[in-house]
Amino acid sequence: MIQKILIANRGEIALRIVRACRELGIKTLAVYSEADVQSLHVQLADEAICIGGPKSTDSYMRADRIISAAEIADVDAIHPGYGFLSENSKFAEQCASCNIKFIGPKAESIRMMGDKSVAKETVRKAGVPIVPGSDGPIDSEAEAVKVGRKIGYPIIIKAVAGGGGRGMRIAHNDVSFAKEYHIARSEAEKSFGNGSVYIEKYIQNPRHIEFQILADSHGKVLHLGERDCSVQRRHQKLIEESPSPFLTSDLRKRMGKAAVRAAEAAQYENAGTIEFIVDARGGFYFIEMNTRIQVEHPVTEEVTGIDLIKEQIRIAAGEKLGLDQNDIEYRGHAIECRINAEDPARNFTPSPGTIGLYYAPGGHGVRVDSHVYSGYTIPPYYDSMIGKLIAHGDNRKMALERMYRALSEYLIRGIKTTIPLHKAILSDPAFIAGKATTAYLEEFLSRTPPDLF
Image 1 (tube, rainbow, N blue to C red):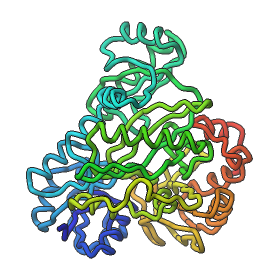
Image 2: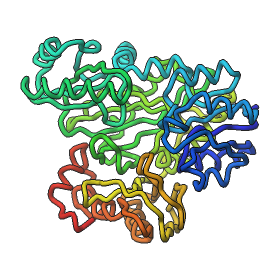
Image 3: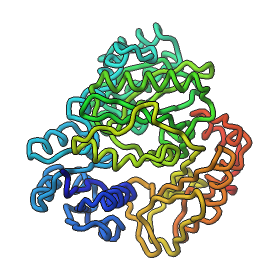
Image 4: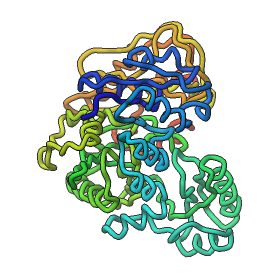
C-alpha cells in the first residue's frame, strides 16, 4: 500500500502527478529547487522540501538530496516523472536499497534499454524489426567508415547513451562522415559522460510512431495504441497525435504486437514507450525504448480513457492490470501541442521571464496541463516547455478544429511562445492532410515567413 509519494521532478509533470495522487488518496511531497518556489506543484503538494540551487545539477539531479528528503518525510515511493533521474538505473537501485519504491521499471530494464546497442539486440532476438546498422559501438573512425560504406549512405550516427537528439548526426558521404563522427562523439561525451556511438542506415523522411506500453509485475504486457510524433525540430517533438493518420489497421496491429514483444523481451514493468520509425511503404523499425512516462502521454489518455499516472502507481504497488488487450477501446482522435517559452521567429530563442497575463482555454474536448499562471516567472535554467494543450474530438477533423480554436483562446503575455507557430502549422494543407514526416517542420519553416508566427 503506497500512502505517500515523493515527486522527483518539476513543472507540469510534477503537477500532473500531484493531481493523480490526490484522486487516489495518496499524500505527496514536492521537492524543488530555489528557482521553482513559485511553481504550482510546490503550492499544491501536501508537503514541499527545497533540495538545492537553481541549476538541475544542484537539485533535481542530486539523487542523494532526493533520497534524504524521502527519508525525512517518510515516503513509500518516488515518482521520477520524465527527464532528470527518470531513466537513471543507479537512482532506481538507490531507491530499492533504501526500501523506497521506484515508480518505474526495474534497474536492470532501464540499463538494458538505455544502452541502444543492447536494446537493439534484445528486441531483434524477439523478432522485432531493427534498422540495419553496426553490431555495437564503433571504436574508430576507420571502422565506422567501413561499416558506413557497407550499410550505404546516408547514415546516422547516434550516441549509445543518447536521447533528445544529442549525440546524433547525419552523414551523406565519407567526407562528411569523418566530421560528423567526431562531433557526435564530443556531444555524447559532454551530454552523457559516454562518448560511444553506433551507426545506422538513415531512413529518409520517415514517420516517428511510438506505442504506449503498460506492464505489471505479474507478467501481463499491454499496448495502448500509438502516437504519431513526426512533427519535430532537431529530434525534439512539438506536436503529437493519436491515432496516427498514416497507419492502416493492419500495420497498427502488427506494430502493436511487435511493441509488446519488445517489452516482454526486456522483462519490462510499469509504463514505457516503444519507438519506431516507419518508411513510406509501411516498413517499420525499432529505434529505442523510453523507460518512463512520456511528455505526450495525455493523447493516449484521451483516446483510451486510461489514466497512465494512476496505472503507474498501481503497478508499483504490486496490483495486477485490470484490463486485457481486447478490452482497450479507442475513442476518437487527440492531438497535443507543446507550449514552449521560445520565439520561433528568432530561431526558437528561449524566452524566460515573468508572465503578465495567463489565460488557459477551455470548453468541450480541451485539456491544459501547465504549472504556470499570471505573475509566474519562468526560470532560465530548465527546458522551455511551460505547458501542453490537448484537444480531443470524435475524429481528426474535429480534434484539429478544437485545437485551433483553443490555441486562439490561449493568452500568455510578457514572453514569446510557440502558440503562433502551432496555429500556422494547423492551417497548413500538408499537415491538415496528415502528410507530416520527420522532415515536415524544417520544410514548413523554410517556406513560411517568420512574421506568420
